[in-house]
Amino acid sequence: MVFDTTLRDGEQSPGVRLSLDDKLEIGRQLAAMGVDIIEAGFPISSPGDFLSVQTLAREIKGVTICGLTRARDGDIEAAAEALKPAERRRIHTGLGVSDNHLQHKLKMTRDQALEVGIRAVKKAREYTDDIEYFMEDSGRADLDYVYRVVEGVIRAGATVINVPDTTGFTYPNEYYHLIKGIIENVPNSDQAVFSCHCHNDLGMATANTLAGVMAGARQVEVTMNGIGERAGNTALEEVVMALHVRQDKFNVTTGIQTQQLLPASRLVSRLTGMVVQRNKAIVGANAYAHSSGIHQDGVLKERSTYEIIDPTLVGAEKSEIILTARSGRHGLKFRLAELGYNFEPARFEEIYTEFCRVADTKSEVTESDLRSIVA
Ligand code: KIV
Ligand code: ZN
Image 1 (cartoon, rainbow, N blue to C red):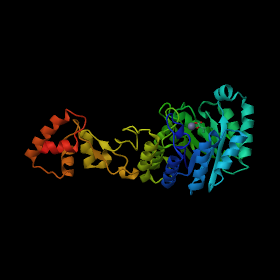
Image 2: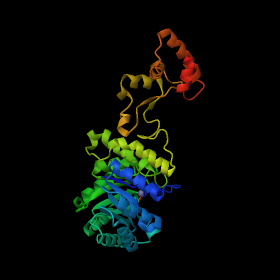
Image 3: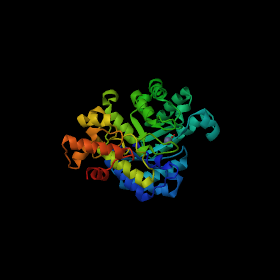
Image 4: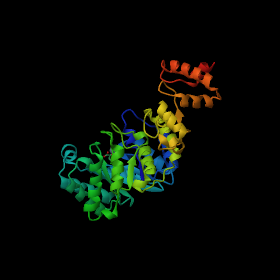
């Protein structure tokens, strides 16, 4: 299951503010792309967020709409109200489980927090039987306490257990054992789906999420382009394509229409104003571009020498041969042929010499440079 939180955790990116129309446009694209659950917002947090969740619940069909709450009655009531028009609705509630969060933020003992969490699940069950429980800061929590919380909230009616690495602290082997440990040690773990929710503070969000899937998690919580608090969340496009390309190892599939990944990435980038770095995996401008002579020669002979993803699979037009000072004859010949030129060897050598001279003066030799070199 792909649980997209671009409109909730993603919108928490510093400097991002999406209007209701923006959220609807993104929500429609996510639904068309095939995500299973859209976390549309945090209804109690502001009237605007309430309205967004309510509007998406009314307008977007064929997908579960989810609202976030703290483990408080007022939050849960607001989420239930906002989610009323949804075809399928989920309440996502919970609270912290690490001693750090319990002592400094919640000022509760472990037992008190567990009791509050169980009450929240029971309250949420009054409105829907699709309840996800988040254990904030699981990545730094005591394992025995995590097991107790999971057992208690499943017994109270939670159907999905979210195991967030809220601070992006864990590394893949550790996150794998966190999920595996829960599944193996909690007696009623077979009654819930486990969900990976990883932040990217150490650049390991995607790797941790995939490790969680290896350990048996069957939901991933992701955002387009990996946007989110601080260094962001796990990038949807990275997890989806890793599961696709390495199906031999993961043995699971998603319902994502991969050709929609690039359009979705561009839409989210445009509406949030968050630029996608050129070398970003899957959706960056350079992801299917080759500039060195050795690589260009390889891909022109056989694409798979340097590409593990056919760019058309993610909605890109084609691989690109970018001419730079590192390019060689094969790349130059290919780009000239694209422009309709085909020279006999001696003339080509002259053009190649001139190309090398120009290439040394700039970062990229463009189509118009090529035309003037030929002229
Ligand atoms: O990172 C986190 O712990 C969260 C929860 C609120 C689910 O975003
Ligand atoms: Zn988060």
